[in-house]
Image (tube, rainbow, N blue to C red):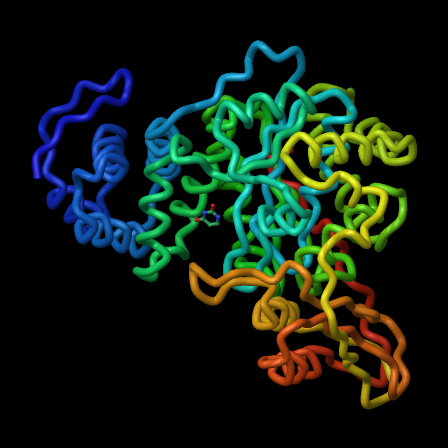
Length: 450
Ligand code: URA
């Protein structure tokens, strides 16, 4: 296949896709022009899927240099529209999480930071595997629309200083194409491909700064801390090469964040945090992420001042008021903000109880995520329909003392078909020991790129 390309600033000789597959297969370094050529071909549909898939596999096996990763990110970013919010009178900042169980901070940090005066154009994703997705959580609010056009996204951002939407066809179309291929060709697990996929979408938001929450532990995609750190360094470095202020927090995902897993249950917990309440780990992470966003967005002089300002936004009710405005702007029932009983509720509940005295030594985090998924809280197949009401509420977390018969967690469900499977999975997820476990590693394990 012979193609020219038109990424700005590139004069390109005619290239052959098969030569580029061979070059990467043999461990060669692709040039910016060669990468742009492949990515344009993916976005326009001029390179066939079998050649793209072969090239993706070569990338997974051989890896890419930092320069190649930056070129790939740049080409994927420019495969579609890049939003321009430079006329807005304050910095544009966002946060991205690599995904976890009960990981719901976006719904809290976006309104905190917007209430403090910065703009938050946030494009999020749906649940992936055992992890939840911001869009699915938001859609549990009756009427809430995440499928905004670029025009609607802009209007929401101007009206509320915060817009919460999904990837539109105009945003990084090459990522849409390549991600779908990666999903079915065993080529998701590549730091380079993950980095280019995440950063191309985030940079298309027209942001000045980005805070990354890179999860590590049993419930994360990066189970090992050193892998999470390597991904964080790659993400931060790539963002900086594209002229953005980027920092990455490596955070614990060895147990679910907060107490709830499941879409409407998680929205309710976020509202608790916006009311100055809620579980300590969730509150802590929301404040820290907000503080870094406020600092990178130059709203405050240091992270400590960012934290103080974030606390003020919660204590004064301004974060909650901003969230209410966003819900209203995006077509949702804003009454849920003051009356969470309007959120979808499961009809039935079942309790998982401890069979012994002792202390919770471990919660198998990924299994808890899978248990919520099989109750209907996530998707096993792409076209599965989510039940927003179902999920799990943890009554005990790691380190807590338990007595035989105590409730470990409550299962909220509607259809009973897979209840027993989920219950068995949850029973096996809690490891109870006689001795208290050693002190936990901190929630925020490391900061990369500060
Ligand atoms: N999230 C993305 O958007 N892309 C990836 O490749 C992995 C996670």
